[in-house]
Image (cartoon, rainbow, N blue to C red; front, side, top):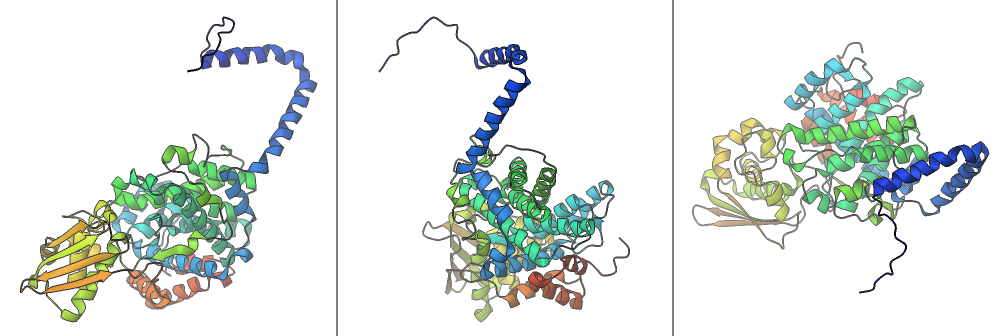
Length: 511
């Protein structure tokens, strides 16, 4: 082991003592320097800082890309998926708007929102932009029926569309010029892409320790989309990302409660808050994503920043978005599909079943192992309830995840016959199901790729059927049809407020 020769005897200094000593020396020298000397020092420091951007950090790279990105640069396939994302989001936001979770949130927040700036989809209420973004984020996620970026299990559109559409509605009035569908689509695609790229950088470690990744990455997507609509400069976008990094929200312990939908709602509001502050030059660190004590290193044991910066403008994570045919956790979908397929040709009654055995991916047990759910929201995280209700009712929409459904005696009886075991060979989008009947016969179904996956995407017809079912009893049938048509025409809309107006009951009255 090498040794260093001792130098002159110097009293050891603590970091605090060293700092105080340097500060005292500076204060004593300050009068002697004079303003001219300080000006030379400041000029040199400014020149040094201006030379630094040759090697931009992650936060700066993202900000520069977002500010420069144009709608015309988006590939047609990316635009198409962005439109599908908005279409699906509007449907689930309208559909979830009458849930008791939204009722309670509105009752709590309405007294604090005196300015009607933006529309709550599916409702007559109008709130300020911030609270509208929150409420629409909640309603779009409460059924767990929204979109999913399967690589990270992020629900991309909730935080981003909730923020962007509320802000767009307000900006149209403020500026006297409406926000076009193309502008909104560009902001939406950019926000979802950055949100998912950042998720890629920290998944799965970040998620495994308990963070709800939609709530922690959502503020970035929201800030990007809002910042793009606000026309932020590159430096302002850096600050917006930094302020978003300071507002991660959501823990997986909340799953099965109203708190889960709070997370994307709050993510929408937090990102919007960040962009609005940044628009007034409210500063943050320039490296809040990648710095030693920044977001990535603080919130995850894995940070792969290549996932964020490589292929910007060429590879779009938002183009990998998928949409749920069933109103529950995505990892249960293969099991639901297997149950629906097996029940149809045989018409076997649940009383004829001795047991249902599932071989599943480990995430199914980790996320959906609630064996005795008592509330509809808990049922969304029960593979046992999901299989039972899908077999008995032939569906897994929001009605199959009501309090009524999880307490139905026939469903409970069949639920108790469902067994799930981990098979390391089974992928997250697969399931191997064996149904043993009381007469000894066995039925078998293996699902390799469920409907709604990237490989087997929901068709336009399926998305419309989902939308229509969700909007039933909220909007008239003709209005629902017109609203869906507007969503499909997003790129050609001169004013996106046409969507928000039609997504509310028409007899809204003034305001």
